Figure 1 (tube, protein in one colour):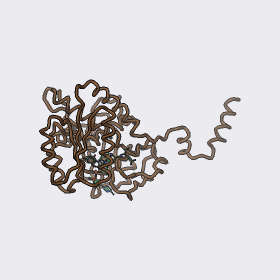
Figure 2: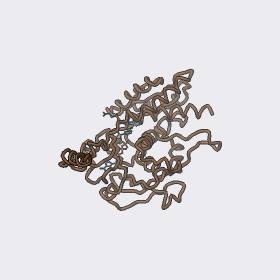
Figure 3: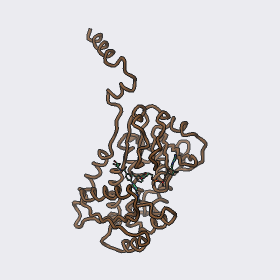
Figure 4: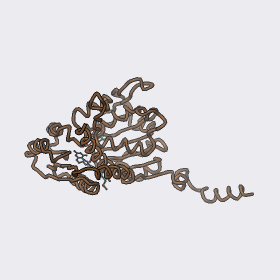
Length: 330
Ligand SMILES: NC(=O)C1=CN([C@@H]2O[C@H](COP(=O)(O)OP(=O)(O)OC[C@H]3O[C@@H](n4cnc5c(N)ncnc54)[C@H](O)[C@@H]3O)[C@@H](O)[C@H]2O)C=CC1
Ligand SMILES: Nc1nc(=O)c2c([nH]1)NC[C@@H]1CN(c3ccc(C(=O)N[C@@H](CCC(=O)O)C(=O)O)cc3)C=[N+]21
């Protein structure tokens, strides 16, 4: 009797709804905010800083008029101050930047620094990036750190006391994928993305390319798109390699995203919208661009959607800063 009543109830409530509406009603489609992911890291960082005798100091060099960079600097300042760090924003001319970075490298009061890019918008920007001493590079973009990442080397020393620094935006995306349960914790550490296919739309040197390598090193098959071509990053069948290899491949965005468990976008234009109808049903979608690369309809296809990641990136910046301080004391 009870069963019959229940069924009638179910049909009258849900009968006219699509499968998607049903999922929404039962709470399976989630927009996950970066702030909720960042909170645990920020709490941990704040507790550690409380044990220090001196406030760690982060310097940001701003030499452009990019509103995204200024906003990012403001958020960083706010998070620093809430977590016990001192943040100093230095607004300088492009021409002064080289000397300013070299002076900060020598300044014992400065624990970490970053330059907001683009500055010249040319290869001179990479030159400036590499001027920052690896000991003070909170973004983890120094050549030695990138080389370690690409070769899946996790430590700076033979004794394995000093951890290599990971680039903060790719690292933030890894932490988000862990939080969302895409990393399978039953699989041994280092292989936890085995069996996952991931598409990354962006192959910049500061985010998209290191991110594709990091995900492939953890076992995923990664399709990396830029405006020109597609590359596949993998550790080979059965993860036979220690670190990833890269191959140019001929696959459309539609075919790649149709088989992807995760789609990550970072296209820096307002007009770009990822065609959400390409998504595999129940995919996980993450956007790190300052523009919304997904229209709200993404929720009709995705199981989890993270619309922006800035707050997690900033918590990784501060985490990297603590690691630099740790490495120095080893
Ligand atoms: N949330 C965060 O923590 C961070 C966010 N960002 C944001 O991410 C975005 C990207 O930044 P960057 O990587 O530095 O930019 P970038 O301009 O250096 O690189 C953009 C990449 O996207 C690719 N691309 C552009 N249009 C495309 C298209 N239609 N299809 C496929 N690929 C396309 C380009 O080929 C290139 O690989 C910006 O909006 C930036 O503000 C950047 C760093 C950190
Ligand atoms: N050396 C360097 N490293 C950078 O990482 C860097 C840079 N230069 N120059 C400027 C761009 C810009 N950028 C963003 C950070 C967070 C969000 C972001 O998504 N923030 C908010 C969204 C805010 C909103 O629009 O509501 C959030 O996640 O909550 C966007 C853009 C990093 N940048």
